[in-house]
Length: 232
Image (cartoon, rainbow, N blue to C red; front, top):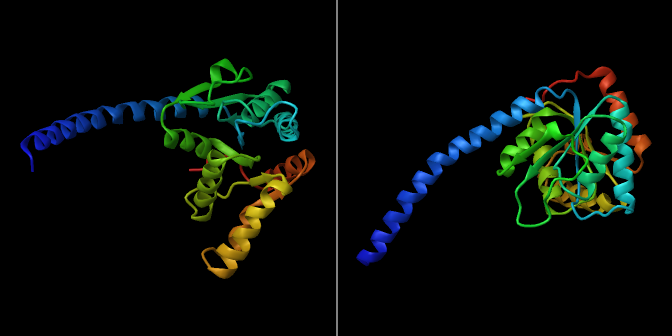
């Protein structure tokens, strides 16, 4: 190997190791801050969905209604803190004087805190995996509104945690039959029936609804017989 290339690689790896060591402390600090704040908030439901959904869109309005109704039931609302569906959910929570939590993430585009987050509940994260731990640990339910890759990432991660029992069985709701039915059909016919990669009972972990009435009633019934507690 050319000596200059070897020296360059050795120097780069030394710098990388030093950076990684300090990175551990930053990650720990994000966990500590998140745990301290969210442990005090009480029962919450996380609402996920597209940052690109605009006010006036039917899913924006539906998200706001669902969040308001759930806040009326005594649940706080946790979102990713950005615009779109996240803004609608935080807006709905504040309209009902419920707790409105935003778990923001640094991104090169799209993400900025919306104005409907309680100032004391406006969290900031640099790491997606830390942020997702906060969603999953402290939420008593998950609502998936229509969204893009980020929503799908959160959808399948939460579903995997519930399926593998790394997390208590927790209500997981998809809202919008028109949006989600194609994906659910593929999961059933290809993933389950053709390839046998999941079991039929795995599909029972998901609920599909279209209206705020259905969503709120499902959570109300579920928590008449189940305890409200952190998930792990």
